Image (cartoon, rainbow, N blue to C red; front, side, top):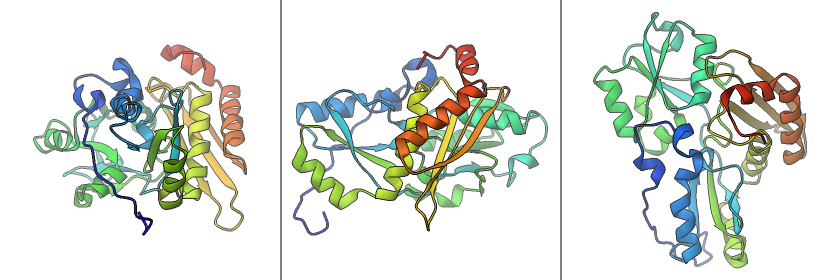
Length: 284
């Protein structure tokens, strides 16, 4: 790592979240399905750090683990993948759009009520195969995943954030470690942490955590830094999966955690608690 003499080997693992492909995450245990096996490996000493897609990491880590670093964010936007159209607006009434995300579903239904949103699980190749054989006319995927896997040519269009706000942590990689590994944490922070991205995702995760941090709620949250002042702008959106009862905020602040809490309170004033109650989400 950066000339500091650290030797790295990869322990490949497949998590329960990768294995359960016939049901939505909201129905089978949520984001923890992507992290549990990796945390067991950390606890047992088989691994010293775990690399996660941060949007799949629970908002509250188990006791004894910390988010040691957040790497520089890749493109946080969602991507339209289709052989037929270059935007959702071009799809005819009844066209099928695949997604595994309640967040995406709620925003699609709000803006394009004439489209049919269908569930889409599986690894990237499986999802693309379903599109290619005509099961649906378009699918929505995270742009970062397609770019990291060298599939940027499959992106027909990047969806503007004004049309589809990303998930908390989308596009960022998080490094999870045991809290008692002080030497390792210091090394990882020095070599891998991006302070700007780290501050931004702390705000995003704070608003999600304050609202329960669950896959059961279609929450979008994205934070960006002003390049001059360094101030944070946090935008968040919550609604029912059909796009109704929308709550939206845009706030500025300097402290990520405080900004996230303020955003959650602002969403609650617009009716977020009623939305979460209607979804059967646990109270935060």
